[in-house]
Length: 364
Image (cartoon, rainbow, N blue to C red; front, side, top):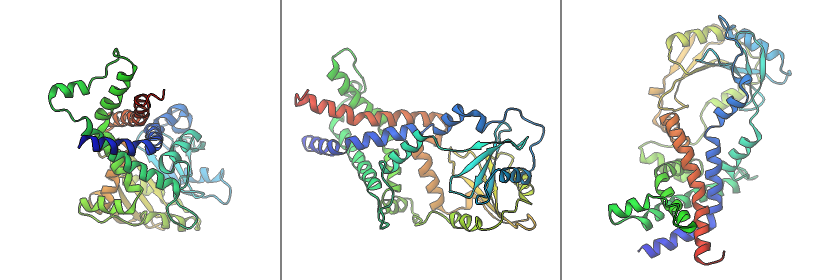
């Protein structure tokens, strides 16, 4: 049985190993993108001096709008709980376009631009530098390669465990030890086996959650396992925001809405106010998508409806849970560090496997 599984492990890993290494490495590079960007460009994300009171949101919105071309509008402002943070101003020109403004002086600090390195890593991680969709609307080759490679990675991990599963505790201890003084081949073998075991749980968690972005059939089955139906679209917010870009922005009641929400939710992580909509995000198990949604009357500023996170559909909660598990944010900085290390180990597994395979056949 082990001989059969060993062959399965080998012939799954050989053709897809390079792709697995690229996916894991690029994923590891993205874990601390936010922290790296904030550290390397602190003037964009942090104020130089904390003032007594920040300027009202409508004033800040007009100051931001004054430096924009007529074709671009301010669509929202995000306020962070830390008084040292600049405010993020969302723009209409693309989904993730934004600039940052000093809330105490109104000085526009600059526009957010994703670093080329991280942009390349994201495109590598999601689409292998290809595209998500083909010209005819079908799945792009890049997304397909990433999906199939991730699925093969899961099978390779499981088959690898079957191959090396120890018969007793003594063998397990030996498997979990990386020997550095018994020759190069033994070192790389130990790194391949022990590294795979140490990172197994995190690698499986990342791979199994990542597959939900690759295949609709897998996403349906994954959600069905939790007794809910997977949503087919990307949510209702996108259409509304695109329609809102055609209107002349009105910031009249943004400050009043923000103050009411901040008073209701003193433990907020960030509050975003836009045209007729607002959201309050919290630190809940590291889930960045846990937030309460509000709508308000743009003419009076009165809040007209509330959609609390605890009352949101199970599919929405699972979607946020999948994201937090995939990026390792569910347990804070500790799980993010472990996710980073596991992804690097995952990237090394095909490389050490290739080395052992080549050495076995004495091609080197």
